[in-house]
Image (cartoon, rainbow, N blue to C red):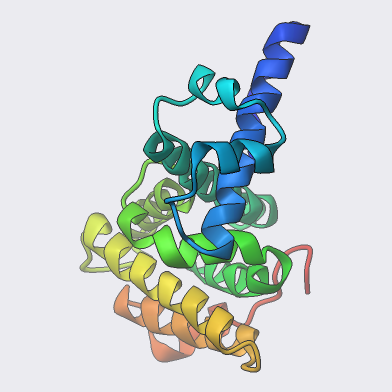
Length: 211
């Protein structure tokens, strides 16, 4: 899960651990059932923390579940970042994001279920993959790799397509996830101005550290 600067003393460490335990419990609930009506007592028990600890960290269940989604989005962005840091081509970055996401349906199923169910409302979030994708879109437009596209509008199309890929992978685990991801990424790249041949080549390049 995402981490921040380490707490400076024992009290701060314990406080941070309690907060993260509550977030982890909320993420599990979102992934398992999506039911945010669970009682604070049930959440605290799942987190293995005292009931009274809840309000030391969150003012409401809504605040907790919002924090859980933000935590999941940030982890998603960090996982992608770990594998694409050596890529310079904006088109390849977009394609790699799709292909890695498809693989995460197997390696990070909890995370992908949260993304499927909660991601639409966060396509333009300032956390997770969205700011990273917007950065890559802007880079591609500035360099001329992408043409005739407003980056914010392009992010809507890219994010919606990515979420549909997540839903497809979770609903149809029998499908070839790599092929589906490459095909969808190629469609997005054609929308961004690449030729069919260029889009296909980019989406079939080896994934750094994986292929």
